[in-house]
Image 1 (cartoon, rainbow, N blue to C red):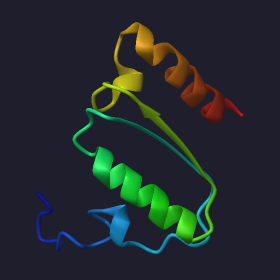
Image 2 (cartoon, one colour):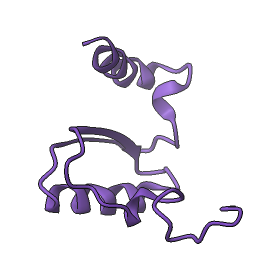
Image 3 (spheres, one colour):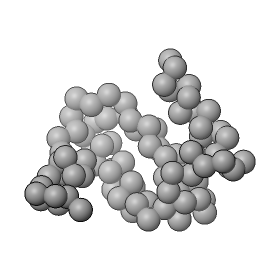
Image 4 (cartoon, rainbow, N blue to C red):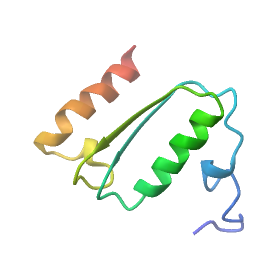
Length: 86
């Protein structure tokens, strides 16, 4: 749901926004994440705009897997913590 905004509004989806000038992006996705095709497309768009993208794709994980209490989340969660504290 986008409320009164169009689905191609950059406030609804960053795929439709201007990316130039953004700081480096770290993105986690997974092969079982429903948004995985969008994540891959966003990475291509960001790289084409000259951005630095650190893309991490985990096999067979679901959406937001780094935040879930499971062994596979330990390493990506540490990476997120390191990014936020540097």
